[in-house]
Structure formats: C-alpha cells, structure tokens
Amino acid sequence: MVKRTGEDSPSQPLKDGERQVDDVDMIGTLEHEMGEFEDVWGDDLESDEEIVIAGDDDNDDELLQQDDEKDMPLEPNASNVYLPSRPLGENEVLEADQSAYELLHSVNVTWPSLSFDVIRDNLGEERQTFPQTVYFVTGSQADITKNNQLTILKLSQLYKTHIDDDASDISDDSNIDEDSLLESRTIPINGGTNRVRVSPHYHHGTLVSTWNETGKVYIYDIATHVSSFDVPGTVIHPENNKPIHIISNHKTEGYAMDWSGLVPGKLATGDNDSKIYITSREEASWTTEKAFFGHAGSVEDLQWSPSEKSVFASSSSDSTIKVWDVRNKKRSFALSVTAHPGTDVNVLSWNKKVSYLLASGADDGAWSVWDLRNFKGENPSPVASFKWHTAPITSIEWHPTEDSVIAVSGADDQVTLWDLSVELDEEEEASRKEMARNGAEIPNQLMFIHQGQESIKEVHWHPQIPGTVITTALSGFNGSLLLCEID
Image (tube, rainbow, N blue to C red; front, side, top):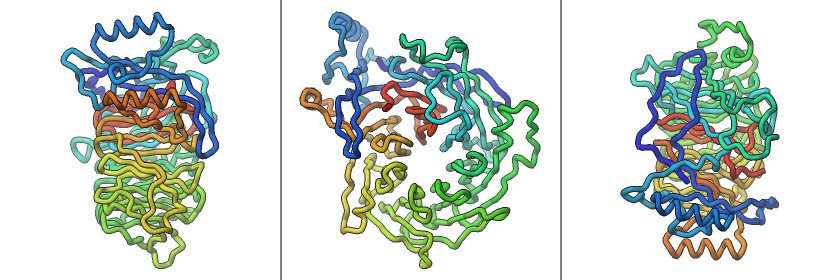
C-alpha cells in the first residue's frame, strides 16, 4: 500500500549538537514489475514482481484476501495499481507500504533547502551492514539573510525499516528499536544558498562550495566540522567557519556548479548572465580564468566529464546542451545540440561508467539520454526520452555504479527510478498492454516511484551505500534504501 498524510509533520529546529529523529511516515511509493532483461550495455538483471496497492478499505481488504489465498502477487491492472496521475476518490487515502523500503528516515531542518550533497566517509565502499551512517551538507533559504547557514550533518544508527527473516541482515549487537541519531554543525553564511557541492577529492571530500544568492561563490573547508562528530574534544574555532576563498567574478547569481572528479580543486560555476568560470586551487592560492561564452540564456547546470580532465558540459535556458574544452583558447564551446526545443534544460548528469552518455532534464517534464558521439551530426536525437513527469524536472543523477540506472525528480512531487536496460518478456509485455488499454500506461523502464514530499529539489545516490537515495524538499530530507535496489 501507499500512504499520504493530510499535512506535513511539524518542523523542529535543528541546533548544533545532536537529537533523536523518528522514521518518516509520510512517503508514498509505487513499485513496478521487473522481469528478465537484456542490458544494451551488457548487464542482465532479474527481480521478482511486486505490486503496490491503493484503494478504498473494502477493495483493499478484498484484494489482500485474494492475494493471501493465492499466495502470489496480484496481477497488475488499471484498477489495483495506483498511479500519481489517478486522483484519489472521496474516501481514499494512500498508506505507506514499509516493506517497499529497506531503509526510510526523514530529517527536519530549521530552514528550507534547495540543495545538498553527500560527504564521502571512511566507513567503507559498497557497505550493506546495518545500522548505516551517512554524512551530508546543506545550505539554507532562511526568512531573512542573517539567519542563513551551511549545515553539516551526521545521521547514524539507521536501522532497517523492513526487517525480513534473514537475521544476517542485522548486526549482532544491533537494537532495531533504537532511534536514529542526528548530529549537526552549522556555519553562518550571508544569503541563501542556491546550490551546494562537495569536492570528491580534497581532504576526503571536505571542500564545499556554495552558490550564493548574492552572486558570490563561497568555498569552505569543513574538515574540522566533520571530524568533530567522531573525535571527542574537537574544537571548532570561529576561523573554521570562514570561507577559504570567495569567487567574485560573477555579476549575478546562478545555480550551475560542479567539482571535477579528475582534477582536485577544479570548480566550474555558471550564472544567470550566461557566463561560465573555471576556478582552480594551485597550492595555497586560487585562480579564476576568464569567462567562457556561448549560451544565449542562463546557465542552468554544469557537469565535468568523468573521463576527460579538460572537458565539461553545460545546459541552459536557451534549450541547448554544450560541450566545452578548457584548452580552447577562444573560450567557446566545441559541440552543441538543441536538446529540448522551446524549454529550459534544467539539469544534467554525466554517466560515470559510460562516459559518452549524458542525461538531461527539462522544464516541460521531459528527460532524455544523449550519446555524445552523435553530437557531431546534424540535429542528433536522444537515444532515450521519457515524458512521465508532469512538471519541470528538478534533478537527475545516474547511479554511481550501475550504468543503466538513473534517478529523476520533478516539481510534480515524484522521485522516479529507472532502469534503461529493461526488456519485458512476452507475459509482462501483455500485462503492460492490458494496463494501457485500461488507462494505466507505465513505461517499461520505470522501476519505482517515491512520493510524499512537497517541492522536491534534488536527489542524490549515496556513492558508498548501494541503492541509497537521499532527497531534499521543502518538507525536509528523506534517505531510502529501496527494496528494488539493483545488486
């Protein structure tokens, strides 16, 4: 089942120190069938089918009774599968099926946040043992300028939401009844934060940049703040809260920003005046190069290539995606495509495993995948394109290790997870066609829908915990390890 509450949970102020947080109870979810697929990139996946049900009480009881009698999942059809496009009836509510998540927690912060980023830690890669611990950083949009802050958070004692029969999934000394623990450190900042990004290199990911609404980009070293969570007696002096560098070249505010994953200390920033600057750390000093020009509108997003040190991509409100090489002395783009005609290209994500694949999300709710090898031709077409979301795409990100899996969020309050390698067998294909005839058409590649938050702004995969997705919205944060994770 799926659950939606009538109103948001009350927000509690978050202060330096620590407090307990409870599991979320306001998230809607829909999990779709998956069969045996042939991955165009060479991966084959298998998963059991699971259907999530929503309806009135009588119908739900009847369907669940039938399910128990047959001891098998219900066949999907337009009457028992809830879709966001279907309005609820007068007496209908959405109830959360906790078994759809392995991990589901929420965090209330003092002020709304438009952006956050995950901080890499030293707890190991590909970890699956519970309880889990995550570190992340967020910037605020406070009621008045002086109240804004950069907040560094450690969320620990994250136990499974859904406990199955396999006791090995729980550590021997775990206490599944224990509340999660939230600890935080704050840095006062001048103005709201449009976007925040963590360098994947410097000091194990403790170099943080914030795109400020004042038109400046601030760079902080939060190593002391992060270590204070785990090293008793760590003192955070006032100078630790000061930026180590300020980029003042931009004459207007912006949102586009990305740290290079190949060159430590190299940052690209783009503003609403169509200018892009590259800033680099060289030993103890910072250098910002002359601006790159080429867009006819605001620069909405930037992404460094995962394989070429000098190459980055940009998206703009001029409907284009452009690819640049910083070695070009003319400071102009090398490749360009009108990706989403007539609408803003809001967000980009570069596939870290298949370096010629770039995903884009637009203001009309569409998102696409591009093969950069085709950009040299005239009017290239995307290799995949979807129009499931009904409002602007606000965030898009490829899975860090699965090259066909991608997360997308939209202003329609949905976070969707997709697997582009999906190919249905004959039985599943027939089932989908039957659902389509009844007005419940679902793209084959759509794996999961996460709901319950309002005004979702960003979604990020945790790079070290397989399947973990963290989102931010005006209603707070949610981190979820999904039952449909790809192993």
